[in-house]
Amino acid sequence: MASYHNHRVIENQDTCALSGKVSWSPVKSIWFTVNFLIGTIGAVLTFSWTSFLVFLLFTAFTLCFGHSLGMHRLLIHRSYSCPKWLEYFLVHLGVIVGLAGPKGMMQTHDFRDWAQRQKGCHSYFGHKESFWKDAYWQIHCDLILEQAPQFKAEESFIKDRVYQFMELSWMLQQLPWAIILFIIGGWAWVIWGVCTRVWISITGHWLIGYFAHNEGQRHWHVEGAAIQGYNLKLASLITMGESLHNNHHAYPNSACLGLKPGELDPGWWMLKLMEKFGLASDIVTHDKLPFREELKELL
Image (cartoon, rainbow, N blue to C red; front, side, top):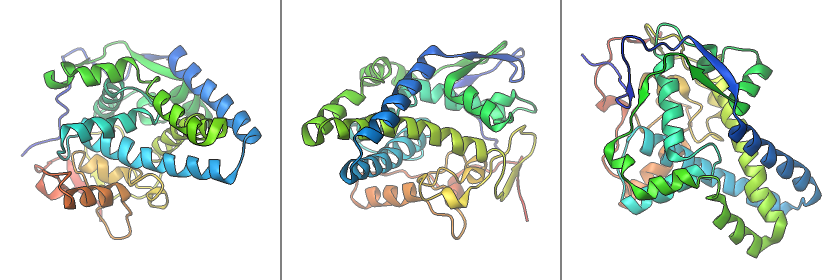
């Protein structure tokens, strides 16, 4: 019998997920605030239906192929394989969602994942504060644990110069797209296609995280875990399946998040399309994962 374990988070007898201090993060806060101000005031002043359409399509494209397929299911969980050039492109699309660079995303995800599986964890990790307090914490702050585990990415990732470059320049990764959008549609397309998209993606990421750890449907319970995930079926289409979070807590390394009838998973649909064209292989599904003794199905 095997339990889910994240090999990038290294614990010792002193590590603790409970004790820590939430501190304002200048980088996160200023990045969000600048995009919010430009992406709201500028969006009102430059509104057109074509700009709004650019925002919708580019947001859907980056969330599906970037955040869900590139950053989450591929880089973090290695739920499938693809050619290296495609991996770089998908992760780049995940970077321009605007949350962090590849290493930052891996570390943030893995620390939260590790903490939620402990018997007790800080409310920051579980979104257990009030709605507005949690919004401030998640969007503008970082949690500094008193006794944090060590994060150690794979050697292949650490030595990868492309990922090193992405990490150092993750905010500047927006620039090539901003130039293309400006050439085609002027400042309106830049504002809607970059700034508005970024602040809404960051806000949406927090919103789904908040509700997916507090309310919704559950098929499975992870015994001994301080935090449980919930499925938000109504949001599954616009989140590319990422809101099916109870399924993900149950089978973290599964490339398919929609496991029951009626659970929409656009990310999975696109992955199967990639497989059909020979662009994805070694796809991991929940039925291929080791048995977890602590995972109990709810009737």
